[in-house]
Image (cartoon, rainbow, N blue to C red; front, side, top):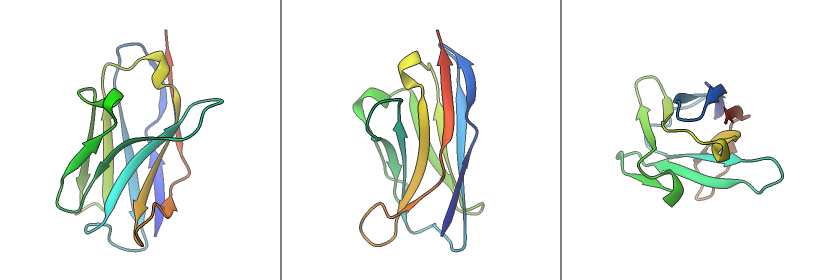
Length: 115
């Protein structure tokens, strides 16, 4: 499976962005999908995940501001990000778990939040 993340860009503090992760090569409808991010000089961290049955889970710092969703007809997962802060600046990656680990990753999309 190939994952293509898009939708990043420059936004002011308090603004919103919606990231997309389009999958190709196979249907992802049954699989757990996730978003991660990596800020400059920091390790990659978990952001949110959504199961094939649409159950969601978020990192504490994103709860209430970020919403993960999926459109299985489009083989795409989204991350709606609201009330963005400068500390949300990072490269955002989508990933899927086909074999029990986060084993397929997209190339990342850069989100920059200006103060």
